[in-house]
Amino acid sequence: MNTSALRAALIVAGLMGLIAVARLAAWPLAQITLPSPSDSVARPTDHTLAPRFSADSVSAIASRDPFRIGRRPALPAYDPLRLAEQQAPPPQRPTLVLVGVMDAASPSAVIEGFPGFEGARVVRVGDVISGLAIKKVGNGRVIVTGMDTTWVLQVREPWKD
Image 1: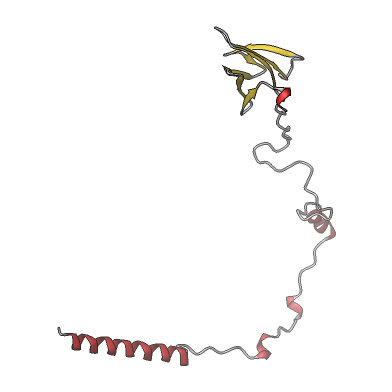
Image 2: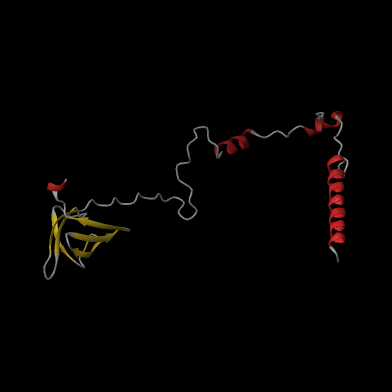
């Protein structure tokens, strides 16, 4: 096929496309009519009135209304697994303070703030105190894990603060 025939085919296809677009823009494919205003006005009749409800059924429905006037949720929180059980808040994470570290053949550290213990405790790697495990001791740092948290404690040096 030569280029002049190809050009002619492209021009014809383009013109047909323009004619189709002009036809769709000028005239819709389907005729749309709106109903007359007299049909849209509803006339009340005696048989369309709402049935009457008893006072007992209305008070029963209003007492279980999820959209309360006080705008407060019901006292027991809805939970399909634990209907009447209230959840306790998670325990607070302790504030651990590294007092000192001793690097030796078996390194140890002095830590304050373990839950259930007053004062400082001497700990070594592998010790578990109140559910907190000592993972690493050395170089002025201690790594403690537990309660879904990992603490990296460093020796407090007040002269650098």
